[in-house]
Length: 221
Image 1 (cartoon, rainbow, N blue to C red):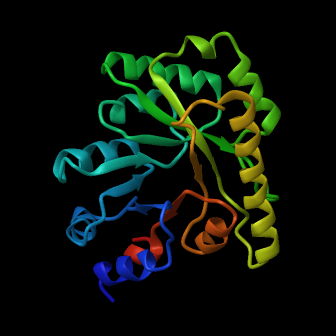
Image 2 (image 1 turned 90 degrees about the horizontal axis):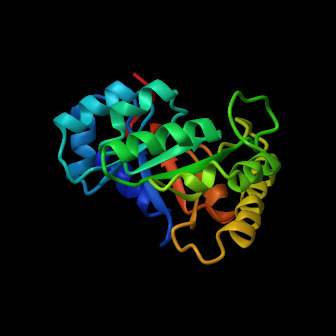
């Protein structure tokens, strides 16, 4: 099946109000162009310099998302154009993003990353840690970032009940933060969860944004 056919099949399973991010990391530009020609406009990358090079080479109305966990020194590569950074889990990183956003005279949208998987993970906040960030006086000085929601990844497992439980925990975190910190903030609306293997469960549990790569482009190169 072609990339266009794969996209059409996936889009037929995604309800209104859920954004599809086509995860194009490691994929060549011609694959992305094929998806673009089929109507896809939002793509996700996790290698900063590769993302910058793809931005330079591909159509300028593409909305680029950084879906990995950026190192502070890497933010400068995509700060001029990135639409959303999915994996932010520290005040220090937010401060770097704010600095680069200010340098580029723009506001950069970010999602707070949470560790919801029962397996070990290097990255991700818990609810208490996120509240510490949002209550920090230093956070309140960051005028060039916008916290637009939350992001998390479920355990890679065949146990659908476990996956559902983990996604539900992220939805509860979103609801908690929305009520306590973002009640009147319309931009705080995204729950980024769900990938090729589990996105349908994620949507059932409240996801507003799914990140799908292999089901569109095939397995990794």
